[in-house]
Image (cartoon, rainbow, N blue to C red; front, top):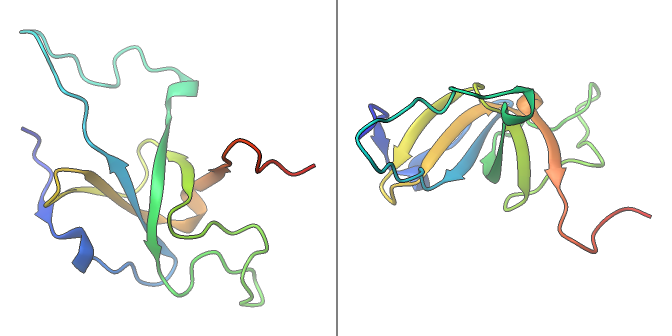
Length: 116
C-alpha cells in the first residue's frame, strides 16, 4: 500500500490556478521484487495521461483574465508532467493529483476530433 493520504475526491475543490486530475487506478504489483516506477523511465515516460476532474476559477485564463480558447474542459484527457503537484488516494482507490494549470501540457483528442 502506498503512503498517499486518503481523501474524498468529491470534496476536493482546487483554488486559484490549480486543477484536480484523476490518474486512474494504480497498477497492480505482482511478484516478490517491486521496482519503483521510475526505474528505466526515459523522457517519453515522464508524462501521465489523466482525466481533468475540475479546476479553480483562475485556471486556464490569459493575462487579461479571459478563458483560453483551447482550454480543456472537465472530463477531457490531458497529458501532465509525471512529478507535478500533490497526489492523494480517493475513496474509490483512484490516484488523484492537484497541480497548476500550467503543468497541463496537452489535451488528448479523441479520434475524429483532430483540427483540420
